[in-house]
Length: 419
Image (cartoon, rainbow, N blue to C red; front, side, top):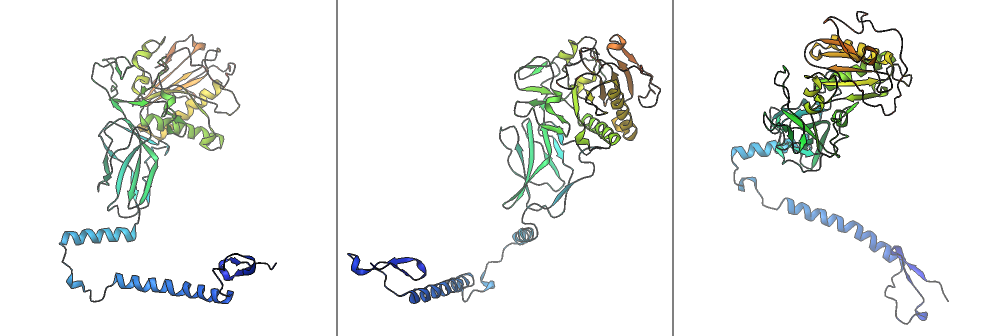
């Protein structure tokens, strides 16, 4: 029996007709098939191009035969054409120098529903025909698209939640993931003691601080949402025993900025990147109800207004939290206030290392200077210091003896409260 022979380049084989019941369908020699294939490969594309050219520019067509469009339509078409040619998508963007606070690390804006939002974005080209849309991180839906306003001021979403901004033009979209928008739940009324079943309590009327206008809703999905490189929503949740979500908290961007700047100072002292500095938050936001149940807590604690946090940092990187670390953190916070007077506030040094807690520093942005120290070694009492006292100048004297170090893993909240 003879081996089947390939028929040209198309790979069809034909067996010996004598060994097949039917006649072969393809009997042309290989050379004929090859020439036919090359001819088709040249003639068909050329014919298609010629036909397309004839369709796009029909014989006898004259621009004068078109109806003259109104001037506004001409301007619009010109703008669309220019934008499509120059900027097929959103123009290149960058953030203003102070967009993320002095630390350049605060990654959120906190607003109320429908509030004007002026994002610190600068564009490297025309924003004509660009659209903006708030995309919900919380999975509850997105806001409708809106034209990018000429003055750059957008309207915050009408519902509370966590959002990113998406800019688009044509089929190209750009997600502004560097900066998130947190829309608070407004305080229901002056006598309200909670939101959506979450108990908060009532703020003291004698306070000189501003009662929070709204509260950030925290769900299981958003509890790990980053506020800055070292701080997340979960760091400011109230430890009040209300286990179910959602929870509600209030925090100010200036506080986040001051804490990140303090971390930066410590990183500079150690000659490392700020990312190498580990931060522990003992207490962030406190509701009036929770604050009132803490032994020794100030009735007007700054924690109730979202502008205070108690933090611990292994500042000397020896794997322990000791009094030395707390003193370094307090000194770093002092340096921050000298560099950025708009972040002035309270600094409290707590040496609480009897096994029930660990050394930490209270930092707030109340707007005026305050200094104190306290803890177990002082009998639990808080000792106010002179207004000009400074934890990095030697004016504030702390006992020289260093107490036993507290472990870094899973530190327990301190038993004593503070301002």
